[in-house]
Length: 403
Image (tube, rainbow, N blue to C red; front, side):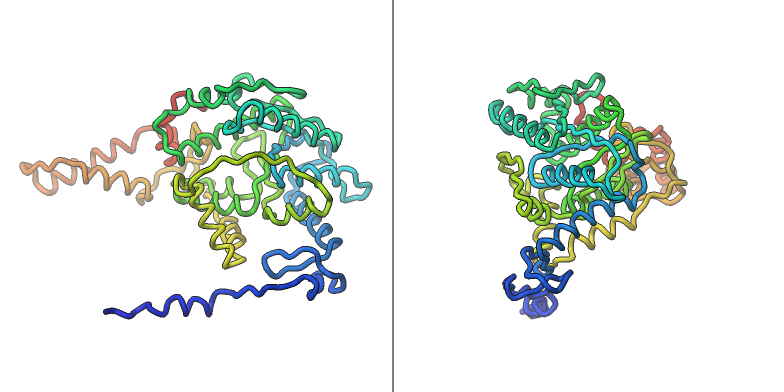
């Protein structure tokens, strides 16, 4: 029998970093080299309390300052989410606004919570909303509430402050916009697009020019690979970068894109903050591409600590050629590229499908068959393009127009 590759696993162990069981008491802080560390990140980076908190605040403010997009007195809609990331973002913004130094955050945050946790019953959702309002009030912020089911079409979005109407059939109302036969992968894509539209509409109503979301570093990495798998290559730069500028007037920013969940969990623990937690739905990781990519990234990260940062930095180098943009997709507002003489992967796939489905006509010569197929293909590609490749596949599952 062939023995090639029998030593693959043992050879791999030589190149895979072996993480030792480190004890914090035997280490010194990586930054100050003096204090005993209390936090260990990425299996090797140890920090004391002071250096960890200073580094976290510097990383957060540095990303905002580096972009130079937000000006003093700008109104910024902050999309709150439950869990460590939402609570940490609240605390980071409050700490930055309360400073009396030149590094003070000088924009005005407006907090919005889009209620879409339909796997919970009404009582659990009411308790969650109450906790969210209480947490925002503890920082002297007002939390605006939006019902996702009520606001999908975004024609007349309703914003509440103290309470929000909750119904058992909210999930069924969302189903009125999406075909029942939609796969979980496509359903998640459509829901993400819908939520983006809701946030932009809320920002317009609250007169905000920017939106803060709570995507973390692992979310960015898995989303990047998901976009590649679903044919959304033209959206990588806007959906994985710091700034999403698809809308001309409102930009979506990701201030937590340099953090992972462990960092923010330590940040909350050190400050003694208890995040708003909810029961998560049970889901098989193999039922959707999004879940599968998330599992793939996390499994790699456990053995190779640079996996996520490498994926994200690679994505940062990818961009769409502005000269080739001919329009915007009606659904996701992504770029539609102009046609060139060279066939793209999408057009090549269409041509291959056309040839494969062609019924052979033996009465025609080879040249006549070739000209017939080329004419049919040219005619099919001359139609006005309203959707990007990925949304052209999703549009079949939409019962109502999202544009």
